[in-house]
Length: 422
Image 1 (cartoon, rainbow, N blue to C red):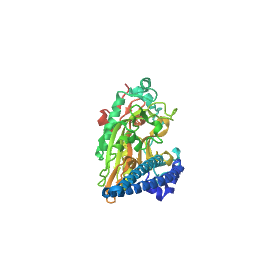
Image 2 (cartoon, one colour; image 1 turned 135 degrees about the vertical axis):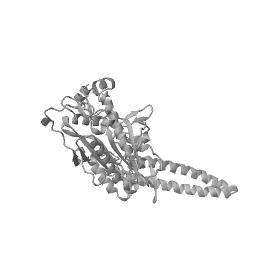
Image 3 (cartoon, rainbow, N blue to C red; image 1 turned 120 degrees about the vertical axis):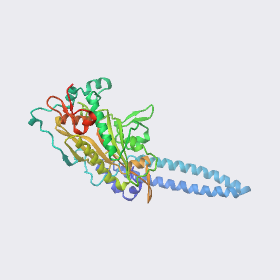
Image 4 (cartoon, one colour; image 1 turned 180 degrees about the vertical axis):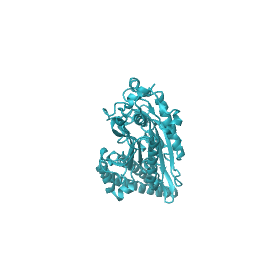
């Protein structure tokens, strides 16, 4: 959540951010009014409590009729304190509910606009010219059948649309990618984690996934738990309600988990293959650090993502995501988009976001600084999302007969240099 001090001192900053995101600006004024009422109610409650404390001390030393009268006053005052406390709690809840609807304040460097208004920062690698090689590239679904690596038909039969099996070399390719990603993350100072994929509401709400993203979340109502759409959620909540040590450097975790997304509102998009699916595995980087270190850490996360894509020997581009496509928690987000030959387009395969103190305030994660106890900054970055990376590797490294060259970095983990037709 945003800092209420910023709201009071510079409400226009938040109004402008909401406008750039294409979100409700009126929430800012609603929150200002609610915050004023909450503060007034808190002052009233504290004044009555102070009066009650003074009266309690007087009762202890009083005798006779004076004590009887003081006890009657104390009883009356106790009722007022209780009512004031109830009003304070009610107004605090009203203010909190409005506060939770306001997104993080965007970075001034973020491009303003909708999904299509991103800024391309760089292109890395050159897409293959298949026509000069004398053949038409096959898409990942056809390659998956030739290699017996991907089975979407049985996936749909067993689990419904947007479901799939990875079999044979497809499954081995996932394990190779995960093992390579984790090995690189450990070398870069990350602690590997296999987190829970079922989380309680505070974890999901604290990371900002019960607002704009709620329609894509699977909720198990009987148990009141959620299936995570990214291990960002359990990694962020790992230190919930804790004071952690980031004064000597960031705390970094690399989580491997299955991820679940309803993909609501995407019907008709990417229905073929495994680009947009309901369940997939992913290695996610997550960092806790001092707010003043967040921008530099964001650049490091992006570089680690680029290092992985470079190792996969895939052409890609890096984009600066526009304000209307950030998600509520991020102030700035960079996506890496791999070239998909059969679509003649770049498609997102990794993403990294700087969420500053927004999630930490919700999750109550703090650190001790020379200025006192403060909220930490949180950042996340996808090191590898398996299905889309498999799509990119298969399509970019295919040969005319349907076999696929294995990137050099994966060969020690996969134990082969070519995926051959089954």
